[in-house]
Image 1 (cartoon, rainbow, N blue to C red):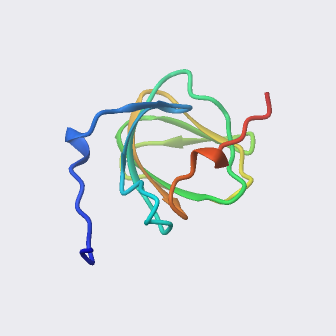
Image 2: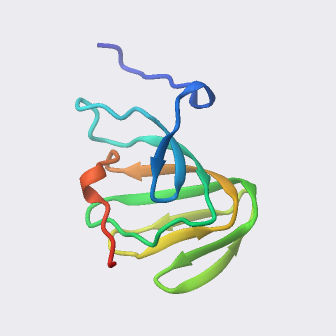
Image 3: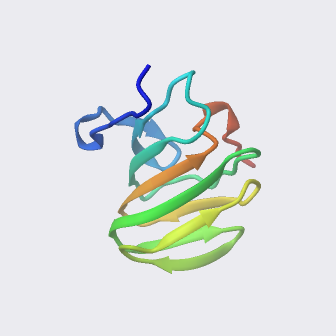
Length: 114
């Protein structure tokens, strides 16, 4: 097995997620460390949280708000947000972001209050 991985996010098929549509790189059973997602945020993203995962968001395109534990923070390109486990969050507005989940993305670690 190689000591590196390469992904071309713009050629990946998107999958529906609580934030909109996500292209997910490096998601595999043999990689527990971190993943990289390019996410097209939709207007109807859902408030959610993670019990184990930390997420780092980097806004690439668009402007809007990040809702973080009820606070609304304006964001624009090159804004970066560090989201700790337990923080209820969602992006509001049409944006494209890079999301880096640490440890690697686990769909079982996505929780909703409703």
